[in-house]
Length: 242
Image (cartoon, rainbow, N blue to C red; front, side, top):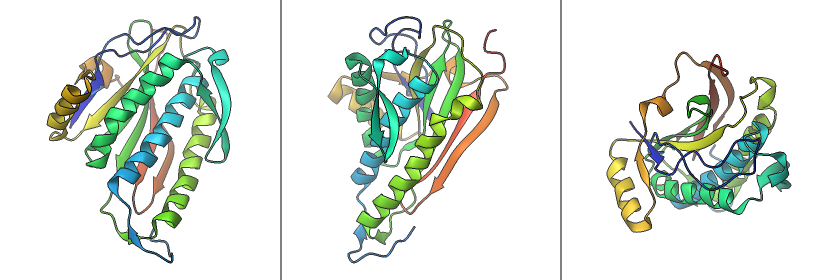
């Protein structure tokens, strides 16, 4: 497995100040349902569903864990539940660009994990929100019914993220974040091609960004469907102030 990260990682400032532009250090390549018409769900559709969910999840994590001031977030509705989304253009673009380059890897089933890492002022991980993703072989199923079912499952993830601060310790002030992508080894070449085409900076992640010593593991949610299996858990550093 290869871990990738962007060269312009650690977006923004801490929660004490208004967020600025991207900057920082790098790490990892930062139910068969009945229906009237049965057909394969294209990989691109699955990737779209995942990227849309991950975008909402990243925004919500940044809000709940107070990486940025609450004033830059606005309440929206997604998956039929209220969520908090950033209204800061540079931050939004950073997240969208990141997921735009992850999407081709999802289409090829080359992604094993997408990780949102919260870093302290010394760029050391204090929390890692880990989305483990498995895409089983696609079946001939009713895509409309299935996607509706998947949306219900993803809603449960959003609700868990919304209340995760109840089981996590407070983070130190001045935190930043980055997104790491754990890929299969063969996907590294695909990532290099994406960089050339899209001029988007991904590098192999530094060891210090990938691993935390003896972290506390907090499972949040799992889901299983015919097109997607996903598990979300948090790795939390034992002593965040040290």
